[in-house]
Image (tube, rainbow, N blue to C red; front, side, top):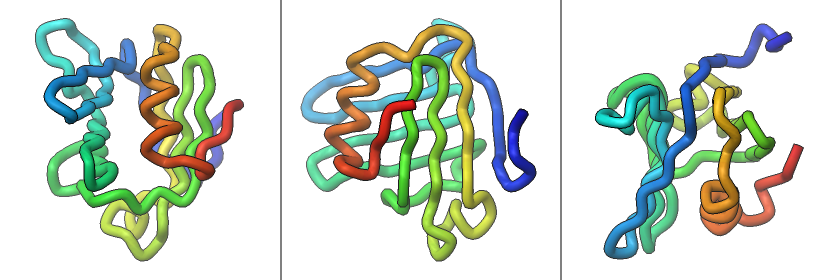
Length: 116
């Protein structure tokens, strides 16, 4: 059961693409279109997030991230662009979230990440 204050959605898989120092983690529902419902872009400066559309994007703003085998639970700063509208976001993946995705998220968000 999802708590009322959580925006939740499901993707087929969580995909990672890495090239030239840029890492993209996204929800993918179809092999031809990897963007799905969210994108996390990790570069030398840090992480940028986008949920459910370009109008809900921001540079970081993650207070906590719980990572499980099939789930990502974000707690966002209420003063941030996304956090003001969606303080908590839960992404469920039908396929298991791979170790490369988990490692990239841990690198990007450090001690704000915990495994569930």
